Structures are given as structure tokens and as C-alpha cells.
Length: 221
Image (cartoon, rainbow, N blue to C red; front, side, top):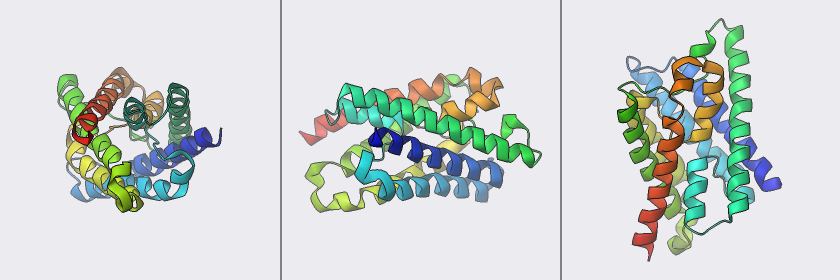
């Protein structure tokens, strides 16, 4: 249970601080500084949590990572399912807190949770999420592999920095999810387009995570 609670806490922090930065900074294509700030917030949240709960749960805080780890044979099915459940719970709680904070500042709920939408259509959004998640989970699997020896000590930093890069590319297209939990929480409060397109941000990252596991098995053998 400690592992599951750690995943809840970690996903809560990632969603609250990452999405919170997007809301507070007014992240949009026309605001380059806000895009960079939001990307850094998500990446640094992962770094912080990696060194906080990494020793307890491995700090997945993302169902796509958990799926990739499971398909790589590093965890059992029960833990995989429970990790995903607690990750979603953590994200929903964070979105609720963020929506409450933002509403007191006079922001509309629809734009106050950092929810994801497909700027150039669902097909484009799905492709972006699959590719970016695949790259991200591949970094996670490689950085945490036993074959990497001493570099494992820097896995949290490598993963966090890669997430910054992923966001710098993906924000323009989808707002960047690469994490179903991080999208489900805000979408429940934003409703509208975010909820209609939520399947993209569940299917895309999970497919990307599965592809990453497959690629890693090939190159690690």
C-alpha cells in the first residue's frame, strides 16, 4: 500500500504543479516564456518526485510508464493495475485543488485546470501523443535499466529533463499529455472539448508506452 500511496502523492504533485504552472503562466502558443515555464514545471516536478518517492515506488506517476515497465517484465499485473488506479486518483485530487484555487482567482473552470485538447485534430493529436510518449517511456526504461550501472543514480534527472524536451515539442499540438492520469484529472473538471477528446490522451500514451517496451526489449537484448 505504501507504494500505491507514493504514486498517488507523486501524481498529485506532478499534476498540481505542472498544470498549475500552465494555468498561472497563461500557457499558449503566443506566450513563449509561458511554454518554457510550463515545460520546466512538469520536468522539475518529475525530478523532485523521483528523488522523493523513487525509493518507495520507483516514481512512475504515469500509467504509460507503468504499462511500459509491466510489459518489460519489471512488475506484476496486480501492481500495474493498482499503480494506475492510484495515479488517476492523485491526478483527480490535484485537478480538484487546482480548479478550486483558480476559481477563487476568477478563472473559468474550462481553462483553469491545464486540460489537454487536440489543436490540429484528433488524428494528429493521437499521433503526437503516441510518438512523444514512446520516446519518453524509452528514456525511462533505459535510464532505470540495470545495464546502465552507476548512471541509474541520475535517472531522475535524465527523465525530468527529457520531459521538459517533450513538452517543448508537444505543447503546440496537444498541450502535451504523455500521461493518461495527468489528462483524466483536469478533463473531468474542464468538461467540453477536453472530455470529448480524453480518449486521445488515454489511448495515445498507452500505445506509446507499449511501443517503447517493445523497442527496449529489442535493443536491450
